[in-house]
Image (cartoon, rainbow, N blue to C red; front, side):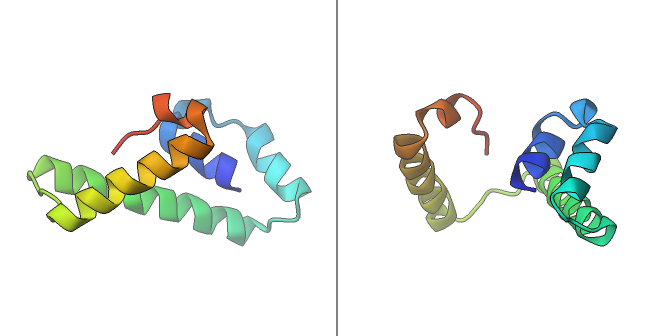
Length: 85
């Protein structure tokens, strides 16, 4: 599910029927899949609104994000090239 959510977020045009079938094959229900799609869509929607009106995150959130990104890339170096705010 997480791989699907990331694909939907990062490259939505690449999501194909086989991605959905794979989730169903892993015992995710249509409701589970819909919920995941709705959550990804909602976060993208809110991010576009925030970016569009120039919302700047509080400094502690930015610091937390940067700390988390360092931790993730230390464990998964290949993630560094694909991470975005």
